[in-house]
Length: 238
Image 1 (cartoon, rainbow, N blue to C red):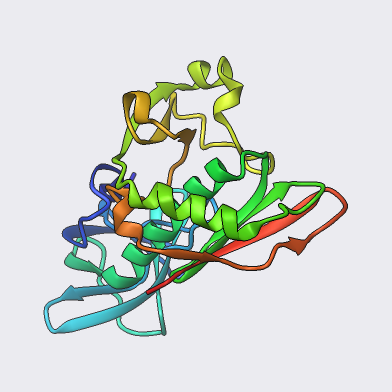
Image 2 (image 1 turned 30 degrees about the horizontal axis):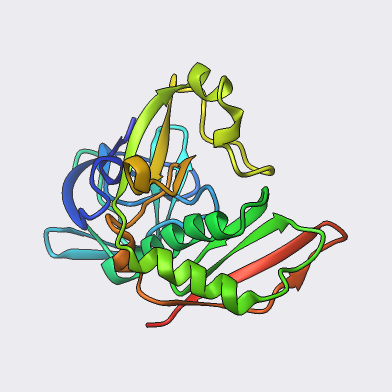
């Protein structure tokens, strides 16, 4: 199975690895990777692989049976099984998605309603809420969100067992997607600490280390997505 380097260090943008396999879909499986695979509303990372005189652009990463598969951007020479390669993320894109992802966790704090869906992008993201009526003053919601960001809160993680999560269902904010379970433990992402903690929820994605890295965000108009469902989008200001 692929060792998930992004799980221990979301800021690692390069690493050497050995090719373990090629999948029938044309993906390259490495023994260790910095590429986050598509999942949980977060797109897979892009970047490139280098070996010898070759440079192969990677369009995205996906989950495969053996771990993580890297899909080339176009048909080209593939590194053979056993080849040592250097993998390099499109770091600017990844970091922007990290900023958006952490901002969405904070959005779920200032709008404390069940989340019915979400999507992360490199410049913007959105959450869908079980929300019969839109907030009356979205400017106030935006200001509250940016005040949380400006507090420069630490973003940390811890792990609990599957059973501990099942015993604490209130940790799960998402109604449509269950946290990744089945491996015996679940990762929690915490924003703030001690009496300054503002959020704690299961999450397998990548985040910035402090909320101040997010920078200012703006909220779009609330979209009606059904009788009890409203979509709130946010965008990075830079």
